[in-house]
Amino acid sequence: MLNKILLLIALALPAGFVEAQDYAKGQLSVAQPWSMALPPNAPTVAAYFVITNKGPDADRLQSVDSPIAGAAQLHEHINQDGLMKMQHVETVDIPAGGNVTFAPMAYHVMLLDLKDRSRLVDGQSFPLTLHFEKAGDLTVEVMVLKQPPDPAAPAHAH
Image 1: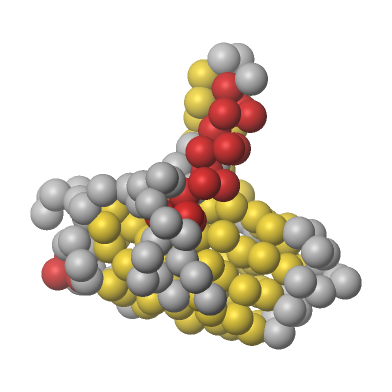
Image 2: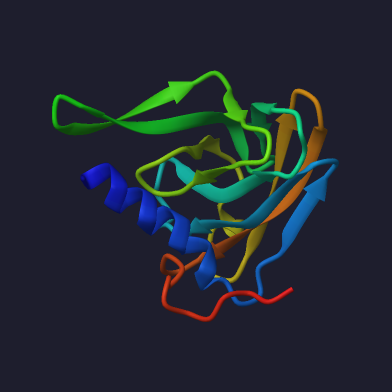
């Protein structure tokens, strides 16, 4: 039951963006990349977004990187023996005709060894490059927010 609630919350998060951008490459699109503003001494930061595959073939997110970090990893939260646990994953499959949500308590990008903290304050943004097996590289601008997006806010209209 908890997993279903978390999934519903994660799917509702992108609706809170009013001015966020969407990015596309081939059959893939990445919607509303965002991150939380953190205290200056925070050792890591996470990035979130939704990847949609409109094509007939699956793809795979193989890795990510950003100039603001010395390392970037794909992570997921799993429920293990009733406890939520974060773990590193090598790749993330993007199903044909489906989507994968990167959100708190789900898949996310963890940026380690932070180099440029000036871009991690509310209202700033930073580049994040996603490396897909078939679609190739796609660079997005991750918006830094003081608070998580409000799921009750009006959806971004295209």
